[in-house]
Length: 506
Image (cartoon, rainbow, N blue to C red; front, side, top):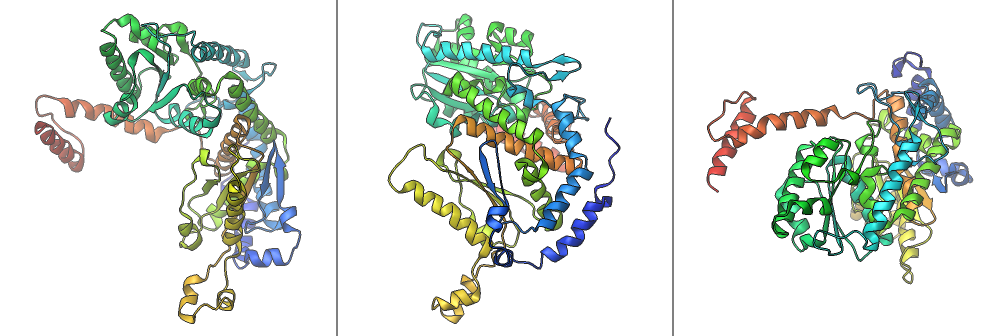
């Protein structure tokens, strides 16, 4: 049993950090580097095949020691052990939090309520692999005997976002003879655009819903079912050849028309936002194949082990998590920018805000030593931009430097950059399934670290559940043939009435 948590701001390390931050705010990264020529080598760490340079942070050795002391005072080590030990650390839902079990090797033992869950995990993985191989080889055919060439994942939230990200990130490794689409939005346009150019006879739907009752997912699934039957002559037997389920509700899966032999399950200790490496990742396995999927799981597991066993001073998720605590609580930073320099990970451009905005935005730069698509000088130029951005953010440009370039006096203020903007740089060899697993696990454990420090349950989603419950109440009010009695606030009541009037015009 863990000891009762002391209020965060009463902890000795917190108080020391609050005092220490006043001194650090006076320092510029230019000064920190100028007074220590080896800073770039000292403030670096390596784990599970990832290299982290965190030297361009507004920290000193004292800062890092105090942050690690804060982690100790918050009982982070015991909390990590509790998660890996299967304790029900999701206190509001009374559930274990065991995404780490989803990528544990077959010989591992992870207990939940006294039962080793690892064999069941591998049973599902084996079932997924068998099914994926059948589809990818052409052995599995649709109702008319045509080969499956199109796969559409229907889900929402964690049942969509993880698979979409994995597919985009690992597109290089996908079977290009197969088309993958993802439908999550209840807006009908999402479904219409996904199936617009597809042949129902060659299309397989993966319906991902643990309970098989999720409103958005099941609405889209029913629409997909109607589209399929319309295209295949109405024979309901076709559903079993064109739909599979990722769910635990066998009764509803069967009622939908899906063969429960093609139902892939998971467990209540798998949080939606942590589920891409469970059966929710079936679309990923179909895209990249079971071997690459296993490599991704191996990458997850390597980072899990690093997080579980490495001292805090060299622990990548702990270091990055503590740095976010440092900037959030003592510098009023309100976000962290994660900036992958790899097209498959979809970088975006908002650097002017980071360089010259009024808010401090710490950045994580992610880059790879080897390109997946070598093309002349492209990769050298890409990596030059990574290193240049971190250098520019850290050191900026002084008025003296700008003036020395011959800039007119009136223009100097517009070309000065304050710098002192913190960043981390994460380097890996190449974007492989294994490395993707390591990166996702890294950020999973960063979030865990932050939750442990702030005493926040990182695993429930009651706000989302409230929205779902209210939507269920409003839907019949929008669809009622007679004017319903409305008991919401005046704004919601008025919006419902206005929408009902707009419907009448269609």
